[in-house]
Length: 240
Image (tube, rainbow, N blue to C red; front, side):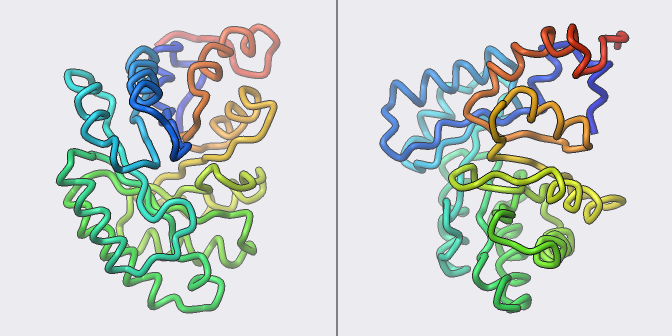
C-alpha cells in the first residue's frame, strides 16, 4: 500500500502501469506510449498486441519501466496450453511482466481445478517474471471474486487484477473484497478499468489499499496530484 502523503509525483509513477490497448495501434502509438511511461516513471508499459513487444523492449531499454504483455486478452477463454504458449513467447520476446485473463466461464461454472491448473501453468510459463491474473470482476459475484483471489494466491501469482479495462471497471466494494482476500499474503492488488472521473477514482483506489493501477491515462492522473492535494482529496505531502 502506498502512503500518498510520502510520495512525489515522480515516485507515484511506480503505482501505474501505462498501456496502449487498441489492437489497431500503430508503431507510432506504441513508441509514444512507451516514452510517456518513461517520462512519468511508470512501473510498466503494456500493449494488447504481442506483435509490438520487440518495439516496446527497444523503447524501454535503459529505463526501469518494464516491458509487459497481455495474455489471452481480453476474454480469457483460451485453453491453458494456448495461454502457456502465448506467455512463453512473450517472455522469449522480452516481456518482463505478464497480465493473463482468467478463464472466467470456468470459474463461474465451479471448475476451480481447471482454473487452478491454468494459474499454476501461467506462473511456470512466466519464468520468474512478474505475473498478474485478471478476474474481470464486473462479471463475477462476491463469492466468485474471493474464490478467484484464493486461486491466484495459491498459485503464487504476484497480483490479483480486477479487470482488463475493456469492459465495465470494478466497484469500490469489489476492490475492497480483493484487498481483504489478499491481505497477509504475497499477492498484491492491481486495479484497471478506472471509471470517470478518472483521476479522483484512481486516487480513491490507492487510498483504499490498491498497490497498482493499470490505465491508458497515467500521465493525466499523476498530473492531477497537486490539484487533488490542494482541495484535500489526497493527503498533503509530508516529506519522504
